[in-house]
Amino acid sequence: MLVKIRYWGGIKGCLIEICHAFRPAAKYASQSQPAYDSGAMKYQYRFRLWQIPIFLGAFMAALVFGSYVQLQRDPPSIAIGRLSAAELELSAETPELSIPWPSKGSAAVGVGGAGLIGSHRDDQPRPIASLVKVMTAYVVLKDHPLRAGDPGPEIKVEAEDIQLYLEQLNNGESVILVREGAVIHQQSLLEGLLVPSGNNLAFLLARWSSGSVEAFVERMNQEAEALGMSQTEYADPSGVSFGNVSTAQDQIKLAMAAMSNPLLARIVRMEQTQLPVVGTVYNVNALLGQDNLVGVKTGWTEEAGACFLFAADWPVDGQTVRVFGAVLGQDTLADAFGASRRLVNATGSSLQVVTAVGKDGPGTPVTTAWGRRTTAVPEDDIRVVVWPGLEVEASLERRSPTREVERGAEVGTIIVTAGEQRIEMPAIAQGSLTNAGILWRLTRGPSMPW
Image 1 (tube, rainbow, N blue to C red):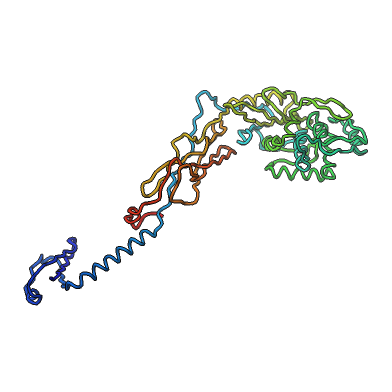
Image 2: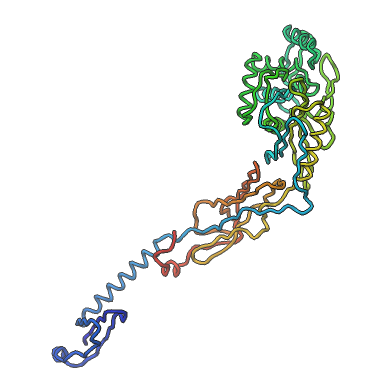
């Protein structure tokens, strides 16, 4: 038997003919060859029968080697689809955010955990009077923290404290009566500082906390810098100096940090308290308990005018959202109170708590190159506080590449941002994804992405 292989050039490819003949090879070879299309190239090769196994063996070896290479190649990792930015539409019942700013001075308003909503005429720092005492209390508690129920160390009233008290009293400042040699707990001094606004107690605490007033003021400015209060400078611990300057926005940053301290937050909410020597004293903040206000501090000097730094716990969609604000440079404390109430009500009524990405939503597609498909959803609803005009963005960061996913497995992290809110939550697979099968791995093309 002879094998005749003729190769035809062009698009015809290869023509292989296996001819069976029972004539002698020599006789067969002497026969003239059939004619073919004159436009094609002609090649003729003759092989003996014993050469066929060689070619079959080579073919099988190539097949085995190619299969081995295909099976050794790693399948592509799973692909997680893009999580589009959340498009949230506030309900028609939500009024547009129209902030009733005061007609003079400066002001700002924000939401705890979400950041600043807006400000008005607040580009230049101005004197802030007794709002300084919030930073004084914040630094004292940061350097000398108190546990719940612990009144703190006893602090002795020295002769220099009495001398300062008399000087401040003659200057018409806000002071709290003390006696030389008396011992007062740290917590009581903080209450006297923040509730009736005792200037002399601010200096007493400063010397006790840092060793000197100068060193304490340096600590105040260090903390202001740490909080990002870039337009704030402190000159004394009481606020009597017009060198104490800040902006409404910076004061909101301080209020958000200060109100995170449970003791400080409890003190500024007191309507009255009992102090050694002087007895019962009352809070200067006449708005406590009204319009959901829970603090934080009033202030007044001739240079600063009337100032009010406030916080209000506003009910929003079954949750409590803390609204912060600051009003500076008003004519009277009554004007500052009135402006603050308008800001609180306008801001609070415009807030919503919405689901940015829901656990029962359509989810994000999770797919494989070999045709498996499922979705990923957050472990729980991701809810954020929003107001008209706030941009909400959502994204998904996948975990390290994998090729198999079990139902309920974490495949990435969903990140939602809204203002200063940033919420991260695991993305959970709703179904299983098995690894690629042998048939797919053998037959996939050479240019598959991986």
